[in-house]
Image (cartoon, rainbow, N blue to C red; front, side, top):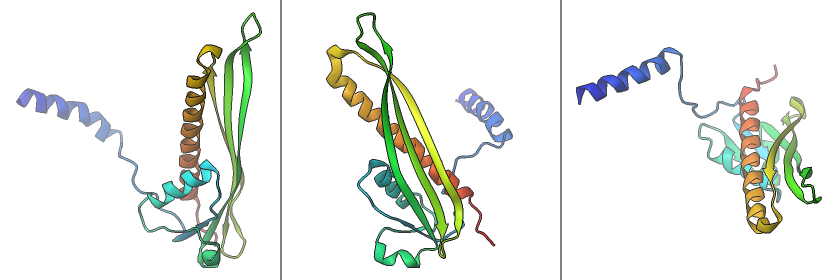
Length: 166
């Protein structure tokens, strides 16, 4: 039992020495944020993530209350791409590249830009087989969902890094 405790302590010591710590709730330079709701999956993921981020952020999704927000996140939309990157000798699709990009901007209360027009993109390669096309459609949907989650996390980190303009 002592040996196990000693091994656990020895294994965790390098992590503590390197400054490792778990990522906590993000600290934003603003207390309230307006995000216009839309039907896109990325927008829904963004709202869900910001609501669950913790901290003191008040998320506003009602357009009538938007003037009360200290900052406004404008998501100009997401773009999905599906490109054939590999074919078999018979001319059938062998590999696809899936892409997801988002274009956004963060503005302050009086229209001043805190974070200018920014475009983020992710791509994933996926093999394709005509005989299991239904399974591949499910895999593509899962990959798009994972890419959206990753892009949302990147946006949240950028929002947390923004400093309030003077």
